[in-house]
Amino acid sequence: MHTWATRQKGRGKTIGFVPTMGALHTGHLELVRRAREENQLVICSIFVNPIQFNKAEDLENYPRTLDSDLRQLGSAGCDAVFSPDTEEMYPEKETRVYDFGHMDKVMEGKYREGHFNGVAIVVDKLLRVTVPDRAYFGEKDFQQLQIIRELVRQEGHPVEITGCPTVREPGGLALSSRNIRLSLAQRREAQKIYEALKMAKGLYPETPVDEIMTRVASFINASPELQVEYFEIVRADDLLPAGTEDKDKEVVGCIAVYAGDIRLIDNMRLNS
View (spheres, rainbow, N blue to C red):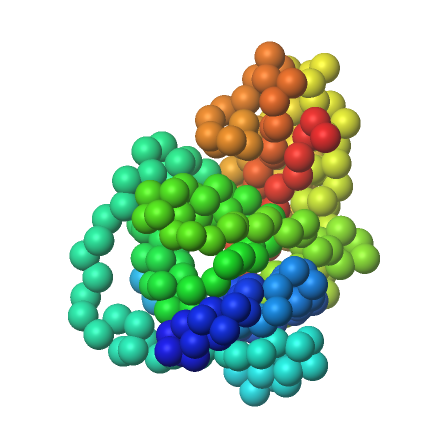
């Protein structure tokens, strides 16, 4: 993969890179479409990264649909797919520990200790293998996107990180590979996550942040199918808690909700 990508770069080709863990959906294919528009070649990776999972059962249950994924990528105009096995990516135990300050300790980081370190390690490896000009990530994983931007700064990767808008189902539920595990009742109720985020957007900044957070949690928790893990209102640039005094900055509401044992995340800009 690295030899091919380097050869293409030597021929003056621009490369767009879309990293995935497979089980592709329309959101992934939108990233490929964007990469296709902005680059001469598109590389996708498919790798279920074990070191970013906190629970063995989550790793075990993560959907793996390689044949279907490859067909979709071929139809979407992807030029090359890198799909390594775990031994190829991690021939030795990884010991690197990144310092992202508070950015990897709040929200997702608070409930998934070590998750972002695992993400950073694999993204660093993938960028070194594929040597892209641009890499594309969905904004649904907003905290991850900001941490990857910091990773690129720390490592000095010559790549432009592009965040792409969240793609949603008709009822507003953010597309996710985990959605296929939802029951019909859970999928219907999970649409309330999007409704709650829109409610928060309508309340900010006139309503105190604490009140918005309480109202969002109460609205979602009223569903027998859903349980809020966290809802935080943060500044987009540094992920620190935002108040009404931050209304002139970009402010994002970030949420994680359990539908049964299936964990769903989403976010929305509250003042744009």
